[in-house]
Image 1 (cartoon, rainbow over the protein chains, first blue to last red):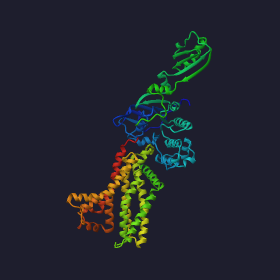
Image 2: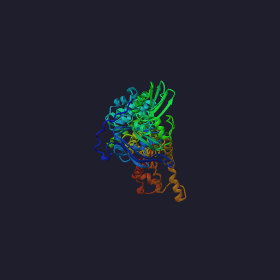
Image 3: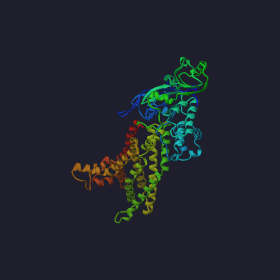
Image 4: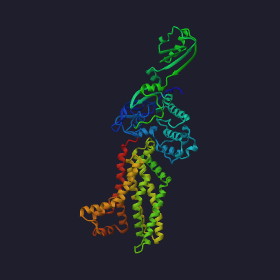
Length: 334
Length: 278
């Protein structure tokens, strides 16, 4: 899945204040303490624009869910404030919840109710006009499964149903907190498609995850949160550029030329030679072709070329100082 | 629109009670126990029987049973959803916390009320069969009072459920409420009497003794049932040996039941409104 094109911003929202036009989520100085010791979110300033798919990254316990909890008014901030679609998260909760769909972290469903009843309940509470079957279709739940009680659902089915509930009323902002947990690869792809599909309708998606590849694949921009603090906000490419961790071009040649001038090229940051392989680190995309051209000019015959994009894992550890996330790392008490 | 949302929640709560057979359990227990206690006065010799007495003893039984059933029917209404996480799904939708709380109160109250009413209908039929008559006013009155008692304990249970974050804690508080308000409260007037007069109460008690006795929901219910069956003057005058003061009027005890319904709900709401759910 390639990078998304940012669709045109919706022109709705005439009832919002002018300065918030185009802003889906904004937090300023947002801080949440639990007791004396736990600082879950620390002075967070974050802006998510309408129409983008925004990735919210961080290891477990970084404060992602707490931020969402404040945005959704599940918890009250200790300091600072948050607005959603121009509405105050603490004072205009109803306005927000009418326009937002959420797949919360640590949610539960009603074991004794069927999937269909869940959706009917959500539709009626949101006073929306969705057809249950359309929602089921979007999340890949079949009608037979929807008629069974949720108590017998697998984790993946439960997650799909919760996703369907989040989609009720075609929300302007879709907040997904670890949406891929419990899903098989098909389910993970489905989440990605739902996010992209939603963005393609001009809606905003806020995608929180500790699994970097999922965010990388769908998001226009990414914020990295660590220990309650925002450490970076940028596009994936922008993050790469900023860190200088671009790509590595590995060339296999018949013989390494005596005069190697690759290092003079713009965008080349590092060259390492090992008998017949030359590894060149570049931090500009265009430098890759230049490297190949130059080495031919230098008199070598190129036998093979491999290009590795640095993964978001590398970026991530560069920012957070942690090794790449293990998906089973334990949740820090929030 | 807001009323519609509360009704939607209330309807679901009611349907849940039907599905989980809570209502039928209430019907069954109430029907069985009140019928039994109505019948018992027939079996005991030397007790002046009569349909009214039967209703009286059925109500006395109900005074013990209804609080525990109403508490069971509602004490997990919010705390259970908070622990399971389904509250996050509901509160991610438009309803406010107040609407969720009120919707749950209405739905569970409705379930308890209908369960009690059906149970009483059964015991009414049993009473009519055993005694060959049914004093309709007394019977309907006792049914309504029992429903009010049930609703008041649903209010207490919802209040408890709103201030607790876990099932275990909600259960602890519900049991405490039952023991305190239904069983231990009877000791309160005696203790006060002992403190004030230096002796235990005898056959005739001061008027305030009856008020203290009736300050709990169950106490108020018992007072109201007695006044209903014996006539409000007679019931009180026989106990205090003189004319009844204004504060022993049935309206006062109805007010007490009302306060026990609304205040726990309000306290629960004020705490729940500000609570961090995570």
